[in-house]
Each structure stands twice: as C-alpha cells, then as structure tokens.
Length: 312
Image 1 (cartoon, rainbow, N blue to C red):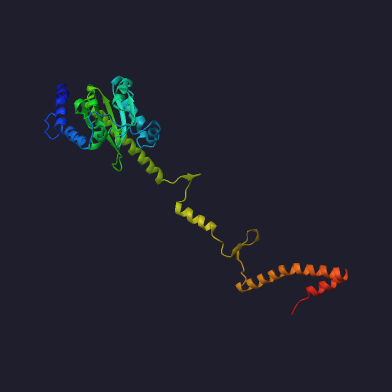
Image 2 (spheres, one colour):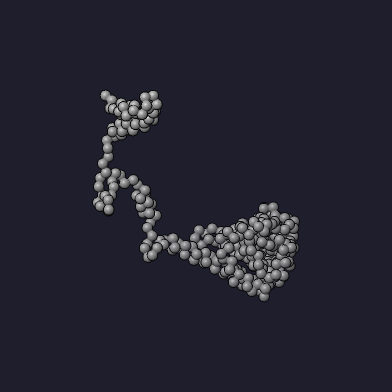
C-alpha cells in the first residue's frame, strides 16, 4: 500500500457510509469492499467500540481449556519476544473472533485499550466490522487491513495482519493469530510472518495429534509384559467371578473332584425336620420343668423318656 492510498480511502469510506449502494472505486480492494458490505448487513456501528464478551475470571477459564493454549509459547517465541523493538501487538483469538491473548508492545497496548482491543473483546466482523482478525475468520484466509480499510472509524490509525488457524486433521477453524501496529506494519513481510506463524501452529497441532495416536496404538507394559487387550481382561474377570459349577478341589491341592449334590426332593424333607426340632425344643424343656415342679426331681427322668420316645 502506498503512502497516498490511506488518505484517498478516507473519502471513499465516508462516501460508502453515506451511500452504501453506490459502486466503489477500484481503489478499494475486493476483500475490503466485501467486508464493508458484510459489516453493514450485520448492523455494525462504525463509531462504536468492540463489545467485551469475557470478564477476567471467565476469560481465564475459557482460554486455559482452549486448544490454542498449548501453542502460546510458540507464538511468543515467533512474534512476541521482539514486539517491543518491532513495535507491534500480538493477539490470538478463538474461532468466533473473541481475543484471548493480547501481548506485545506495552505502549501500543495502552493505546489499543481505548478502542477495546483487549483480551475478552469480540473482534469478529459482526462485533467490530472490517478488521484483520475478523475478516481472516470470515474469509478463512490470511488478510491485511490497513488504516481506512477498517470499517470502524476509531481503528483508522491502525494497521493489522492476521491468519486463521485450523485443526490440521479435521480442517475445523480453531482461531486466528494477529499482528497490530501503526502504518509501518502494513506490507507483505508482516503478512508473510503471520502466515508462517499460523502454519507453525498447525504443524505443532499435527505433531501432537500424531503423538497421541501413536501412544494410543501401543499398549502400556508392566515389567516388560504387554498389557492384555480390554476384551481379554473383561473375559478373564468374568471367569474369576463365575461360580465353580459344582467342582471343588481335593485337600492339599489334589485333582478336582465332582461334588455330590443331594436330590432336590430331600431338601424340603430335611428343612421340615430341622424346623420341627427347633419348635419342639422349647416345648420339651417347659414340660420337663413342669413335671419336676409337680412330682419332684424323681419325675424328670420318666418325663424325659416319654418326651423323647419316638412316635408312630
């Protein structure tokens, strides 16, 4: 982008807001023109700030569980370590355009807070209009938005480049990585840098996925013995709980011998016999004590003989 182009676009942006249906000049790149029209259809106010979607506590919990969280050391090493010297801000957002991490040049971050370019803010096209993170997510392509190409008036002093980050296996959109700074940031080198960072993030995701797949395909071993498959372990556990089916071991580790089972018909006879003995015992004792009280100690042997004599 040349030095004259941002100034020329100021008037074009104002004219577009005044007459959205009027044709745009060739000065407006197609990706920007399409984004301006999408922003209007989404009802974005060009003078409003991006909304804040997360407070501090909910933001911390959400981003800790986000799949891009393990990649932040990589992002910092590629983009944020030299941010103070290079003069830019590094932002990483989710697939909805919510900024999760905003790091980099301290002075620029302080200025960016005035337009709500902070962690927890929504910078999708629906939240802030045309901007690099939001337009990269909308088009699913790396993009550069400079100065008056932004839809929001408060963002015109800034330039930014961003690239989407996808799941390397499913292709699902995971988020976006962004560089934001002054007019000097605009250019092909910045766009190439952020594109390379997004590619490195996807490569690390792919390496982690392959490592998990390799670990899951191998069974853990205990003392060098491969672990049994789950189905075999389940069958073995069921056999241990299964009754022995009438077999018992002979004393002192002998061979298994068959256990005799009594006929079922005798079970009821023996049960009734045991029940009669339990019921008769209290009555017999009471009769012996009564005979001894009436006839004296001599009557106890005779009464016992009568009570215990077999009946016909």
